Amino acid sequence: LGQLEEAARPHAGAVAILLEDARWQVRQAACDALRKFGIDALVRYAGHVARRLGDEDGDVRRAAVQALEQLGEAAGPHSDAVAAHLADSRWPVRQAACQALGVLGKAAAPR
Image 1 (cartoon, rainbow, N blue to C red):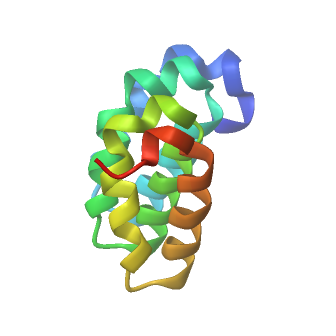
Image 2: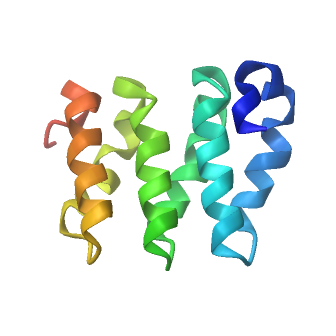
């Protein structure tokens, strides 16, 4: 569905439910798909994606950071949670957080 981008947007709610799946691969794929659905869908489910920042799996955390990055400054409410991943135990998550904070711009400024 993620490859269909905007055409798949009506299914974003069903994909958001998969963010709670027991399998990390499904949670990661759901983050990736929502990122590709476009800003409108991602804004609607940003809170759901942000909850995956606390996922036990590093690949899911990285995918969640990358999805929130797509929001740019609109991800402001989640910027502190993204910034916390600069100290993640996995380097790909740290790298994604660093890149995301650059994209979030002023929304990522310390409060």
